[in-house]
Amino acid sequence: MGRDPEARIELPVAVSAHVRHAVSDADVVILDLRANRYSILDGSARCIWEAAQRLARWDALVDALVDEFDVEAGRAAADAAAFLDDCRRRGWIGQGAEPRRPVRSTSTRPRATGAWIWLLRTYVELRARGLWATYRHLASFGVPERIGDGGGLLGRALRAFSRAENAFHVRRAPDDCLLRSFALAFFLRSSGLRAVHCIGVSRYPFAAHAWVEVDGRPIGESFDPSDHVLLSRLD
Image (cartoon, rainbow, N blue to C red):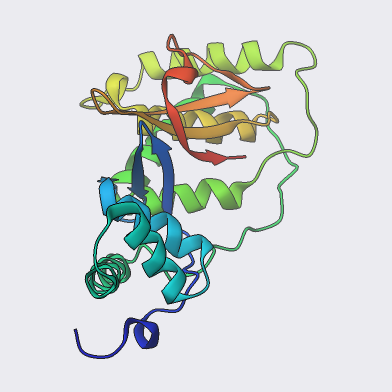
């Protein structure tokens, strides 16, 4: 294995800004926003992933693996070093947090034309720049400072978005939850509503979904969010 793992990887590890992770049915689900890819960690991989984030010493991490899987210390240290080296190569650890810009407070009247433009802009951005760039765009866009739905603003905005969706014709658009959820979040925030973008997974069978919440409830969705483990919440 070459040099000691302690010389290669410093504990506790920091999860990279473009990585989201959560426990689902005893496994760790990882969403790499930059690669637009899900990964499942089970067994020793899950144990190393979780221990490496909370422990500051390699001997403590090795002891945790020895206790959990009844293996020799040398084998545990080698497995941990190999796994964390792989995590680093994938860019899952050690790349710091993404800075957030100041919150925007401006808003515009919700119109179907504006919603259609957000659908188009989001479609182009997802295809040309990818999920991570679109995610960072929404994070930098921020949310309005005020909270509430005075005068039925949410209802008007959703009716405008529905009309825009009916006039927006691209392949898979009605079934593309990423396109719909990001465009809806952009549009609602630009209309003055505190829209929260969420990504969650269910494990058996594996399924991922992205949706938007306002005041803690999903908007325009027929599913129950409690069926999904939340991976990402952008508010």
